[in-house]
Image 1 (cartoon, rainbow, N blue to C red):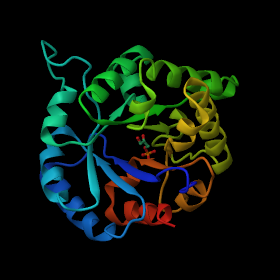
Image 2 (image 1 turned 45 degrees about the horizontal axis):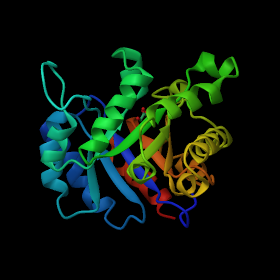
Image 3 (image 1 turned 180 degrees about the vertical axis):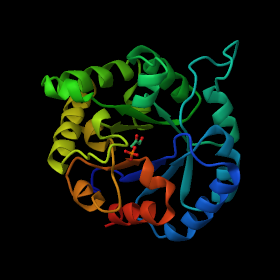
Length: 255
Ligand code: 13P
């Protein structure tokens, strides 16, 4: 983290977990545990938990995000949720391009870009996920893949709008596997993403961009990952479902 240049942000991605009573219990515990955080704290929750999360976190330092949104403003898209619907509720953030969306729901770089555009137009902040598959890392094309995902996702995004974007580097092989990237690997790719953004915009814009790491980040390894210059926070899956673990990661980012 380099807190003089950019904001450190720890975001939980709950994925498809927690009923409303379970969400209520977790958030209630979390509020007390992270109230003195010296970093941004965001919880991205299933659509069914958004209202609960917004009500419980009102007046606290926890911000609320959704886990996806559609690119159209409205229409015949059964099962989808628009960015305007989220914004109207008071949701602040939305995760876009998560590898699980790419892997299981046919998300492509182009639809990621469309969703990013829709989210920005609705006034939301975006947590844009990029990351390579294990085979792509083995083939030595991590930079090409992550660079391409970043460039396509940011098509048509102005320098002013970039201020509402966080990029989360999530190597697919590290998600939910317990196999974390080493802090050096995380820093190397995060730094590479920053050079891509510097070329697309400029050095100042790239320096101000929060670039998180995600993939089996937990209470035990957060300190080391967050000590890296280019790791500006984390997007946390499994460990965000336990208040104490998530709070320990928030504490690590508060140093
Ligand atoms: P895990 O922390 O469970 O590996 O998940 C990471 C992730 O996908 C966050 O978006």
